[in-house]
Structures are given as structure tokens and as C-alpha cells.
Length: 74
Image (cartoon, rainbow, N blue to C red):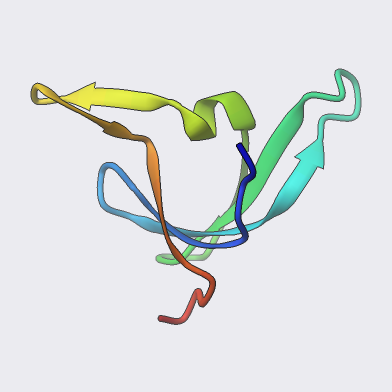
């Protein structure tokens, strides 16, 4: 599954902007590079496998991140 650039919502409600897919320098594992669209706008990386997984919370299974669109300002 391809990771689209743009805005996503985490299952807990916060929004993030995916900036790209990068590789870990030692393992070459592909990671998603993203920044928070709240607070200080910190940048983070997460393995693609975690980005794409589903989570179960309060009996509801859902994607960890849901794509909202290309425009991070929308």
C-alpha cells in the first residue's frame, strides 16, 4: 500500500501531515516521516507497518491513521 502525502487523522483525534517515506540508516526499514498539526509541530517517524495497521479501541477496529487529503491547511 502506498503512503500518500498530505493530512491524516490519528485514531485518537490529532491531525498530522505526512512529509514523505524515508529509510532507517542502519536497517533500511521504510518509515513514514510526519509532523504534528498542533502544538509545536514536532516531526516524527513511524515504521510503515505500524502506520498502516488497524487498532481496536472501545470495541471498535479502525485504521491507526485515516487519510484526509493533500492540503495540510484544509
